Image (cartoon, rainbow, N blue to C red; front, top):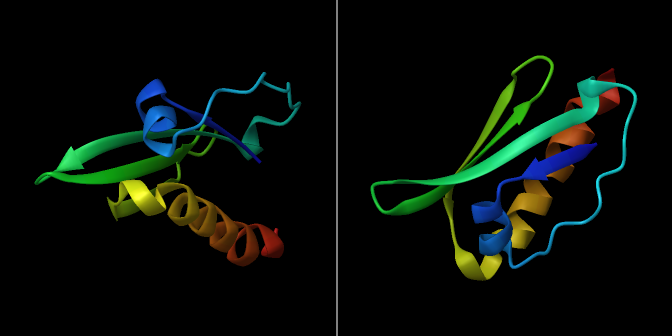
Length: 83
C-alpha cells in the first residue's frame, strides 16, 4: 500500500518524502491530508481508485506517526485481509 502525503501532513509527522515507487495497480494507492476541525488536527486518507475514505480525528503531534501507522495497520488487517 502506498500513501502519498501532502507536505503539510509530512511536516506534522516529522517525515521526509521518499522516492515514489511505481505500483501497477492503483487500487492500493492512497492520498492523505491533514486539516483542522474546531482547532483539532484531523487526517483524511482516500483511496485513489474507489475514493473510499478513512477519517482520523484529533491527531496529536507527539503521537501522530504512531496514530497514523496504527490506523493503516487496522485497515490492512480488517479490510485487505478479506480481499
